[in-house]
Image 1 (cartoon, rainbow, N blue to C red):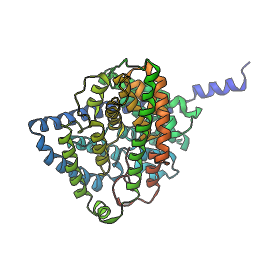
Image 2 (tube, rainbow, N blue to C red):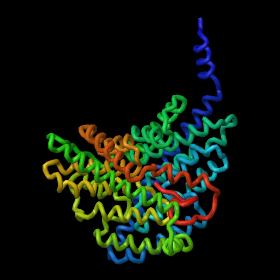
Image 3 (spheres, helix red, strand yellow):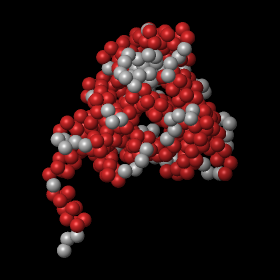
Image 4 (cartoon, one colour):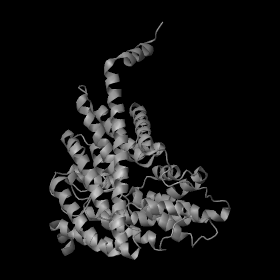
Length: 447
């Protein structure tokens, strides 16, 4: 004899409506995986084209970066204001707001298309930004767009679509399925809900399969077997955790403060002449790039990968210069994220800090620097150590990565008590108006 729970389970399993919803989720996950693969390919091409330009003469950057970033800023402000920054704050705001019009505005397909095109244009101009954060907003927008095909849409279902889209975006962008799930729980939803957990897992798996089918199965930063073999090596955990957390907290605090308004004439210049400010920022980026032999342009993926694999030939100041380039790019009010640049900055800092702990393997210190700075910026320690572990395929470093991420998180909280994405998301609950200053001013935001 069937129990009440068994009868209810059969009704749910054979009902048509749940299957329609499942098909919507699966279709959306396929779209997210394909979009992430397309975006990754486009980003690589844009960075390579800019690299070919400055290979002819590094001085071309003094013209290309100001002109390209001024154009990017103009198009963003004029046509796609909600595409500014990384997109994670927009997704966070859409996920937690009860204002349906606001969700539609922040996660429209128009915004997603602008996000792709303008991020590629920024990378083509030498900006130090990433594509992974924007992929979160793009993934959420693609999944959210499917909600119109669900006649019995409820807030819970719509929220599940957004959450699944953002998780699938991270997983497909980095080829890190576990990090996608953890990111959705720790950073986006801040809770683990059994009603949406299966949906998120399914979306991550499907998006990951599509991405792998299009790009191949790869480890984002290659493979390293570096490990802390002796007790003295653990000093690197303390050093990297403190320095990475401190600098990550400073970065977040500057960005949050800038979003709330810069006073004085400089602030007025940023507010009233954003295109000219972007051109000035492009000139600063070009100068930093010249000082760093061109290594600070783009996402920093190749530089970080070479540091992890121990094949890098980068200046000793790479980590600091990349941090300045990323901060400059982030304050220009253009689309682009900081996931990949932050990991690259952390790798550079790890290389520099290895001189303080010469008895620890350099490769291990590089990885610890990555997780420390990344955790310091986003203040999501679990996401930080999981994503670095998956991207370097180094499970032997799991415990040191966990310890470093927690130390960095604690130090960063002392410097910047408010989490970056939460602070930026608050701007999107205000009335929609022209941006008052640099991102993440309403409707500006970033990763």
